Amino acid sequence: MLINADLATRAVIDTRALPWVPSPLAGVERKMLERDGGEVARATSVVRYAAGSAFDAHEHGGGEEFFVLEGVFSDEHGDYPAGTYVRNPPNSRHRPFSREGCVLFVKLRQIAPDDGARVVVDTTKSAWEPYPGAQGLDMLMLHKHGRERVYLARWAAGASYPMHRHAGGEEVYVLSGELSDDVGTYPAGTWIRSPVGSQHAPFSKEGAVIYVKSGHLVEPVAWSRPAA
Image (cartoon, rainbow, N blue to C red):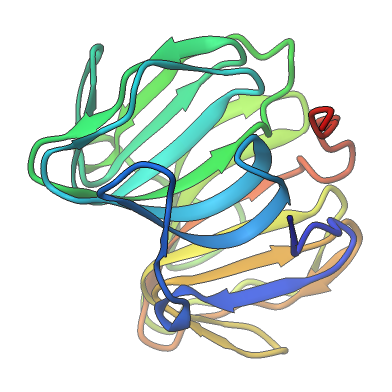
């Protein structure tokens, strides 16, 4: 299955307009944003767990990272309420479930083999810092590895950032509010992938909070589809 699999192409998806697609496990549904492969795939998705649903224990060969959008996600290592960022490194293993139900923004098989850090950040209890060179813009760094940066950016109403180039590409998921640039306007729930070398001048009229992953598309993690 190929969905927005060409990483050199810009992609913009309002996830609110996408249907939920059942997964092989009852009670777990997905909105597929980016996918290269079948059930084992390099993938970016919004995933919804019904209350009481669970996956069997499994391994993430290429790693997994997710941000909890709603509810509480859990595994044998702990509980992760809305606003939590979790990064499970390549070859990590867990048994996920949700007692009350939850919605996640998930990226699979996109972590470098030499990035062995497990990261858990409750962003509701973390300190923000001013974004360098910008008025009305704050950031909360979640993870760094090589060129890759993962962080939250908080835009005050009326904040803007000058035209700039994404030498390593960028992905954005709009968590709240509304983000705009010289190309369009992106409400909460929008996923944007801007390829290597793209440029724009973002701003927010009403304010916004966005999840950002940048620098990772210049040398994307190698992915080979499993043999049939």
